[in-house]
Structure formats: C-alpha cells, structure tokens
Image (cartoon, rainbow, N blue to C red; front, side):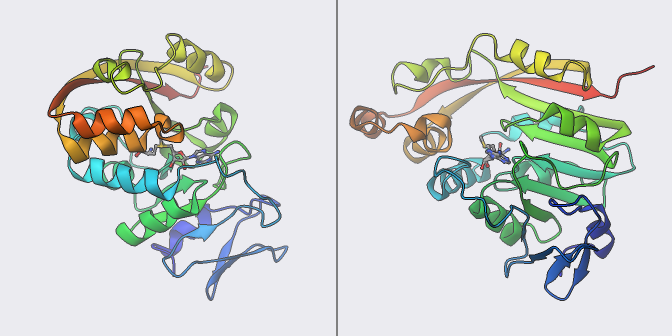
Length: 278
Ligand SMILES: C[S@@+](CC[C@H](N)C(=O)[O-])C[C@H]1O[C@@H](n2cnc3c(N)ncnc32)[C@H](O)[C@@H]1O
C-alpha cells in the first residue's frame, strides 16, 4: 500500500492523464493502464517500452555517495535556508522533482499530508521509498511530464535537477510556490582546478529564468554561501555525487587520495516562482 490512501488521488496515468486508484499491489486508471507498486513501495510510471540511455538519471554509485554526503549534514545549511522559501501554504501536495534519495523532501514540506518524490532513476525511487515510508516515490521523466494532478502542488521543489517549466506551471496550485535551487558559478571554486571538476556555466541563472518566461513568474531570489571543511570520504562523496563523476580520471582519483582536509565554498542560487498575478 502507498503511504496515505488519499494521496493516490493526486497521481495521474502517464499514458492517458486520468486519475489512478489503488487496486491490490497496483495503480490502475479507468482505461486499465496498470502500474505495479514495487516491494519497497515506489511506483514506476515510465512506459515499459521506453529504453532509457545509461546516462539518464543518477547511477547507484552517485546516489550512494549523495546519501552519505547529505546524511553527514554537509548541506544542512542549505536546508535551513530553504525553510523560508519552501514554505507550504497549507493546501495541496508537495512534489520534489529529481528527488534523489528524498533527503530534502523528508526535511521540507512536512506541512502537507501528501509528499511525492519524482525521479527517473529506479534506484533513487527505491532508496527514497526504503528510507522515507511516509513519502510516495514515483519513477517518471520530468521532460515527458509530471504524473500528478493539475493545480495541486502547494510546494514544488527542484534542487539541482532537470526542470520542465510548462509542467511546473500546470501542476502548481494557484497559491503555490516552485522553489528551484541551482549551483552558482563560484560553487566549489577551490576544487574545480585541483580535482578537474566541471564548472557551473556563468549564465546558468539567466538560462533558467528565461526558460520559465511565459510559464511562471519569478517571486524571489536568494544567494546562499557557506564554507565546508572536507576530509577523505566526504570529499570523495562530494565529487562522486556530482556531474564530474560521469567523467572519471586516474589523475582525479590520485589527487583525491592524496588530499588532506580541504576547505571549500558551497554557493547556490534559490529562485522562487509563482503563478503570474493578473
Ligand atoms: C543532481 S541530482 C539531485 C538530487 C536531489 N535533488 C538532491 O539534491 O539530493 C539530480 C536528480 O535528478 C534525477 N533526474 C535526472 N534526469 C531526470 C529526468 N529527466 N526526470 C526526472 N528525474 C531526473 C537524477 O536521477 C537525480 O536523482
């Protein structure tokens, strides 16, 4: 059974858009499109005919590194800062797009009885469902659509994850807020050259804001920075959970092995969006 019977009402069939209901160990729509609830409790809503490229979604190794790094509390300052913008208005569900291990969803949005984590990675959904029994995790591709009811999201989170502004606008409740977190250009600046990491584009924020034009209106912007001192495992986890992990190199592995304590700056931009006011 999924957490919160009533929450199922917010889930829609990815094939026909009709509501799903829980029947035994499955979710079923009126056209009898059927999606099994996995043993760990997540539901895979990706069309079964669709073979995804290996590089889509985070790998099991990246997710394990992310879980260890976040559990150790290194990004807790980000969560503390998000408590303001990520305020739930009291009505509607909470959805985290690209929810990963479910770490942020578990810490934020507990003002709602229904919380949904959406991720394209089955490993992420399994991890989330195993760790957070009171949250519903769905496997879906945000670029194809969010399998949730229109105008139902009191709070939408997107933390370092792909965005679909048209879908964000469709699911957002009229009073709801979409909170998008992106790395700032100086994120981990001290580590980029030393460990040959990918750098955040200078115009990333402009690109994101432009993508939302015509869909949702920007309401607020905050720049958050804090210092972290990382040793051994934490440094390897930080590198292992990020985009550079997809481009491993022997030089980087050696540099990480040789590094003692490293102090670096986390730097993020938090963008809040709402519906256009008429
Ligand atoms: C950088 S991680 C961030 C995870 C989480 N928000 C966090 O900060 O811990 C990006 C997440 O987006 C997921 N993702 C990538 N492409 C996606 C897509 N098209 N639809 C849904 N999720 C996607 C990945 O599997 C991964 O879990």
